[in-house]
Structures are given as structure tokens and as C-alpha cells.
Image (cartoon, rainbow, N blue to C red; front, side, top):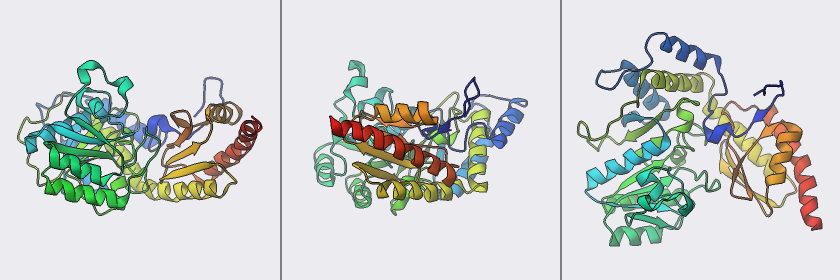
Length: 362
């Protein structure tokens, strides 16, 4: 990226993991521009063939060809519809989520988000059960004793600090939700669309969720979200609805993202470059923890990281993300190269040595 004065920056944050194929990719710009010259929007009262094209391409590339697709406009909206759908099909009200989880800022989604500061009184709900992360015993206890419609968990916790659920935890969640007749919702809004080195992060296991939610990288900056619904679930007409969801421009943006991901093998690149970054970071003489998968990386320090991030930005032109006071998040476009990764590593090593030495002296 470049600013108004022509200064060049390396974006390792991608606007909360939204920029999946890179800023201003020429194929993406071309497709959206061409579509806008035809028709940009009409409501879902008229069939839009681009929705079918998107659904078929998404199913093929993601490996979820048997799933049904509902299109919306954002991650919060995707989760709202997923929770509503789970309540409809089970006839139950309560929702289980997990500590440090984030699912959105709207009504039901924010009620199950572990951040009291953004839950207004109108959003408070006795139906929200927020349990310890990776705790299968606490989950079964809640499923036993409550009328639970769904268990929702992020493929990798993003805002909470890049925490990867144990594979066995997800496997057991699927078994328990089947046993107690609840829906398993995988929130892949930040961790999906190739970011983890798989299309969805849960695909590191053999789990087949009942519902999968996605957004962020789906449109590379164009507002689009989606809900993938297991074929065993049969929504009735009008159960879910949207005015803007699945509009012509949104579909073209999402189709273009999938085509670029496939043509440029960006999922494989995310795995390769992400593994390289984590391996190099792990080999440094360090006093910080590295965790994540693919190009969804967290670095947790024993001191505040404000100075590190500022130095990286103002001295080296490198954008990074944050979680709380002590965690740096790396969520770059999936096309990040090894050379760009090395540019970051060289800059980070120099900055970290200076800043950590300062804290050691204190």
C-alpha cells in the first residue's frame, strides 16, 4: 500500500483479515467494474443467477459441495442467522459459546460474545452460556442441564488472541451436539477462506459442522457474508431473509476472490508462508509465545506491545494488528511472499531486541 505522500507500506493486518487476495487486485477490480456497468443491485424478489454460480464455486473450492448457502452482508449478520436457524430447527433457546470468543456486535451475536463492554442492557440474555474454551466437560454439563439450541465456536479465535481449539475438542463437540440434539456452528468469519492453510480452519479435523458462518475475506473488502447449512437441515421458504444479501456486486466480488484464490493457489501459499513465519519466529531468542495456523498468527508478549507496533509502522512501514495490550496479530493477504515475510522478520527482530532490552532494564 502507499499513502498520499508516496510512502510504501507492507500490510500484515489486512483490515481485520478482510483483504484476502490483496488490495486492488486487477482481476477483482475488472469484474466488479464490468458488473456495475450492467446492474449493481436488485432485491431477492428476482432470481440472481450469480448466486448459483457463487454457491457452486464456493462448494467446489471449499470441499462443502453438499451444503446449502444463504448469503448476507457481514459476519455479525451471518452469525445472527446461524443462531436463529439453530433455534428454529431445534425448538430451543440457549446458546453455548466460549471465553475470549467474538461473534459480532448485533443482538444475539453480541450476547454470546465474551466482552461485557460491548453488551448493552438490551443485548443481555439468559440464553447465553459462555464457557471456558476447550472445556468439553463443562460443555457436556451445560448441554445436559439446559435447553441448548447450538454450540458456536470459532475455527481459530481471532480477537481473543489467536487461540486454536484442540482438534479433539471439536471432534467431541460434534458428538455431544448430536447426542443432545443441538446444532454445531463453526464461526469461520476470520479464520475461514484459506487463512489457516485450509479453506476452513475446522478442516484440520474430520468434523462436519451443522452450520458454517463466513464473511471478512469472502469479499476482499466488499461487504458480503454467508451461512453454509448442512444438507440434513431443511430450511423453509422465508425462514431467513435479506434485502442486500447476495446482490449482483457482492456475488461478483466473492466469485472473483474464489477465482484468484484458485488460480494463484493462495490457500497453499498461506500454509507455506505461514509455516515459514511461525518456524522462524519460534527459532528466535525470545520471551514471547507464537501460535496460530497459516497466515493467522498471534505473538503474545510479557509486556505491552504498543512500542513494537509503532516502531514497525513508523520506522519500517509495516502494519500489524493487536489483541489486548500484549498480543500482536498477523493477518496479511494470502498472497504474502517469503521475501515479504523476511522483510517483516528482519524488522521485527531489530525492534524486538531494542524494546525487550528496555523492559529488561526496568
